[in-house]
Amino acid sequence: MGRFRSEHTLEAIETMRSRLGAEEVDFRGRAVLLFSGGRDSSVVASAYCHAFPQSELHLLMIDNGLLSRMGCTKRQAELVKGLFPNTDIVFHVKRVSQMMREIGMQDVEKDFTERGHSTLLICLACKLIMGYSAMKYARETGINIVMDGYANRQRDYPEQTDEFMSVLRRVYQEGEVVYLSPLYELLSDKDLVNQMLSELGITIPRQEPVCMWANSFSTAEPKEITRYLERKLEQLRANDPILHV
Image (cartoon, rainbow, N blue to C red; front, top):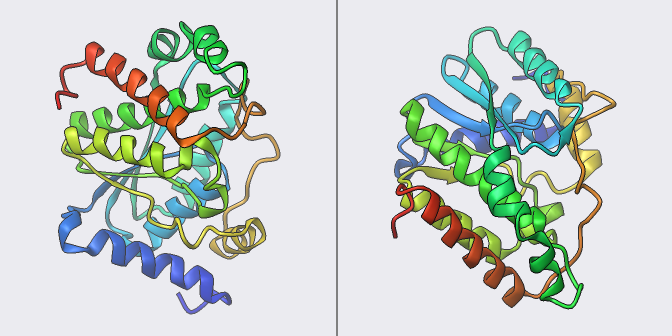
């Protein structure tokens, strides 16, 4: 690892090793990463492979039925696999379009109008479904750790607020799966992330996958987020007995 000029790149690898090596995590050499192929998830994937070169990593893409240019994610996964031949890397696409229709889209008009057209919280439903789907995938594959590329520079997004994260952690706890955003504090600046990517040998495609709701970001009151999520979580529980608490 002496070839890295930046202390931030070394810190990312050491942080990954420390977070997954913590006693309470019970890391068994296998992990799932919610993978879009973008900057943050690519840094997490690379840091993981450097930290645990002989391990297994599942790059999990969630297809919500609203994405375009999904082939970019697959190509990015192939790039990561080529860079780290000693790591057993599995790329898997989990399609959740029906769940997204039933839980996210079916009541979208009601969800929007009941708040006086003040916020559109569809991204909350999407991220909740993604988290739930990753938890279920981990259970199905016998893996007890799910990671994501959440970054503190995006903490004002409704789907990264404390209110959302509290509900998401409950989903993983109920599924008995460990959930980590291992580089959350380090992914604080886009230029810094780009520097780490360059040193890690990762290039980012010019056209990343884009959701049709990608530009619908708006702020929301904490109580609105909590109320919306509790309703969506109730619908998830009705759909699947895994969520039983």
